[in-house]
Image (cartoon, rainbow, N blue to C red):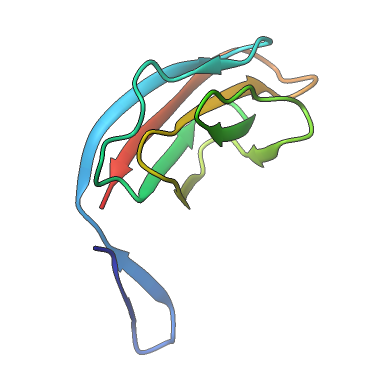
Length: 105
C-alpha cells in the first residue's frame, strides 16, 4: 500500500516499498521489459538516461505520440499486475539510453 503525506509546506511525498528493477534500452525501436509486473505491483518508478515515450499494457508498443518521460527525471505511475512497459527514443533524441523500471507497492 502506498501512503501519502504532506510536509509543513503542503508538499506531497510518498512512502513506498521498492521491488524488482528491470532495465530496457531506449532506442529508435519500441522495446518492452522482459517480465510482466508482479501480482502485488500497483506502481512503478521510472527513470531514463535519455528522453523517451512510453506505453503500458499487456503487450505494449511505444510510439511517438505516447507519454513522454524526460531524461534524468523520476516519475511514478500506476500500473496493474501482469502489465509491461515499452519505450522508444524521442524523435531527434541525441543518443540511445536506458530506462530503469522499478516495481513498487
